[in-house]
Length: 468
Ligand SMILES: *Cc1c(COP(=O)(O)O)cnc(C)c1O
Picture (cartoon, rainbow, N blue to C red):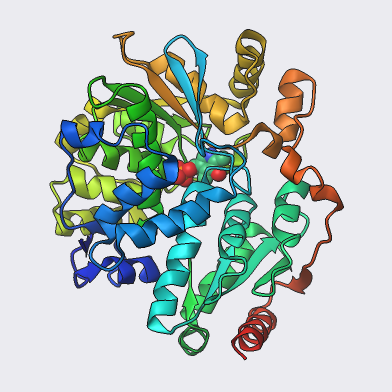
């Protein structure tokens, strides 16, 4: 499979280069040159496969010819072996016609593990083959950092430095990062905000001599491999509910649009996905786009679902490119105007086409707490605030045909957001047994000022020591 950029000014690339590069040179995002499609018969033949096998089968369509299905299977088995559920991503019925696809049984209790656990292994595989190493630097407000650390711990060809704002992450979030004592992982608590951390990472990437010397890399949510690794769980759920012989719908609590984009790709590959419901908190730029073609950025406001506190959904560019008939020039112009004016001018015809599949839904913090309470009272189901937005959206926006089941992407374990769950239900959810001792584990991190030179010195020392 070869890949092109949504902005049309970058050379066509193979999967391995797309994996290591993340962003295309022209500032665009990579997409496959053509979409692989499976016939109904081919989909039926995948029913009942264990998750790791299904994942290897589908991922192979995107990694060929460089990485074979057999190589992928070794990686997917290892990636999902550490999950706390034998089904990897179990499907649980929560009310008539509505199911929860639990994507949070990985090491950091959120759906990002589904892709990241595989990505860390893909990086190692490709770098070992090429005899290269990279230094991955990243900034986190909590969730992404821990998923990246768990994915890259003990990987031979990867060194990693993650910056988090000192004292501004929850104890669970911090400890999920700082209790990983692997020699290739370094945590820095920056005396500043999350924005300071992000600015420091950007400054490191903009420091060309430093970037080249350290072979800096990133594993952020625009990496195509992350999207690809999220496709299999949509297929897993759809097949379990009768696809390709029965249509299904998905409801996805959304921030950067990466998770729901993978569902869109699954549909493009031939699964009968009738409807995609996009759930949002008060930061509802995507829901506003879908309901009224109003894609205008507003200041980010904190909510009970912090992983969705995002105003510019970077992965939307991939859908935009498709909606514009794969016109790279028009995509580049639209994105440039969005950056300049804060409002994305999507042609009405493209927007109308999007609304045939996508439905938007916004829920306030109060509504989110009420939904957590209701689900627990009526179905004894404990949802985290992100998942609760998905379940409320599923009920509000489900297809008229009751024969079409709606699957909610359950993106975090309730114990990852215990304060909100306690507020709604009156009790604190327990961490799963395998991490019950998180608060007793040894932590390791250093506190540094928000100063580029100080941070670069630590990154350099870390990469050198491990390369020696
Ligand atoms: C990252 C995240 C989301 C949003 O996913 P996107 O791919 O950015 O849309 C939703 N819920 C949780 C718990 C997350 O960590």
